[in-house]
Image (cartoon, rainbow, N blue to C red; front, side):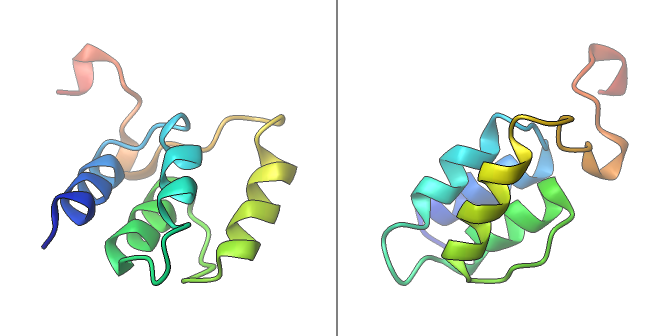
Length: 81
């Protein structure tokens, strides 16, 4: 696993809305590693697979609305650790 794949995997373990644009940007180098799309799926609950255009369109529609739900019950508070 490359450093980039490991970083994407780590972002998916601690889901935060702020990670989404960085992960989408990391997909610009094609072919993008599958762990990046896995992290996006875990964070957002969406399943667009390796369709970068679908991820970009979804993010444009979603980013100004309610925050992306935290997966795995993680809320980012210290009490969750």
